[in-house]
Picture 1 (cartoon, rainbow, N blue to C red):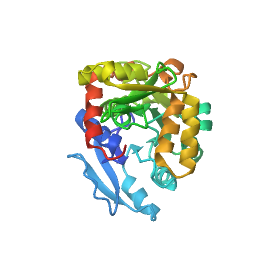
Picture 2 (spheres, helix red, strand yellow):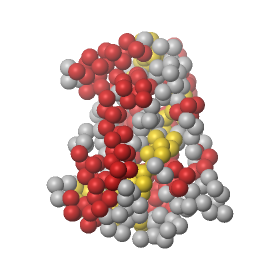
Picture 3 (tube, one colour):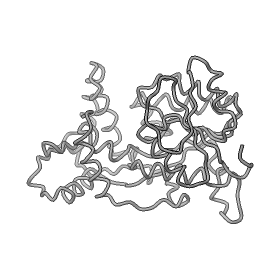
Picture 4 (cartoon, helix red, strand yellow):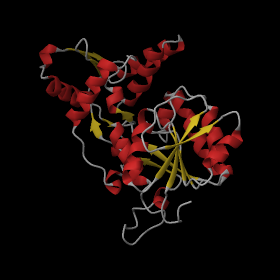
Length: 324
């Protein structure tokens, strides 16, 4: 175990996944952490070099507890389709192993926003996980909110409305509503910086730069606060095209959301995507947590990123990804 002052040993579930890979690599890069991936027995995911591996069986809770022995923090990064009981099993195991800190499976929109929880039912599974951690009383949590991932979301036409292959874009309402969104590298940097803070206030670091400040709270980090029109301007710069080269249409956000709900109920998974993303662009600032809650970017020393570089990465991903 680490001393009481800093976190050293970090276990990650999902270290080979979209955000988990960047988090693991950023933690290793600090040189301050030993990182262990907890993987299913049958998993063949490629993991970052330098990471230790421990196999776990979700049907055998003791295997998870054993794998967590000696860890200071557990990070849970799982896909939306993961069985809902898996996170609860991990949280119970963390309590049994006396893990001081758990970063649960957030990494997206603001699940402390009651309006979002009401309108996007899948988000409703998040608060009970935080309640479980608190109720068990052995671990503290930090719920890290990042907004949707930029290079992932911009590449999917049902998400931010861009179809690069056909040069079309659908603006929700007027396309001017700003939301927060993060790149995968920024998510990785944020977690690595967060878990490099002293646990308690330190004279050298200052009172704000400690984990105690964020104990059992939501924290917010972001790469960009942008509207669809900001994204479109970036796309035009990156592709060296003009607005005349694109077909731009508009949809009323609330109507698009309702259509997405209807399609989802008929089994269309893209309907789920349209519903979830469009809800973020309502004129209630539910997607702009920088405005409503503030971010800890400055506390973590996160860099300002280049929007066009992130857009270029998203366009490249749109050519490679199969989920459109």
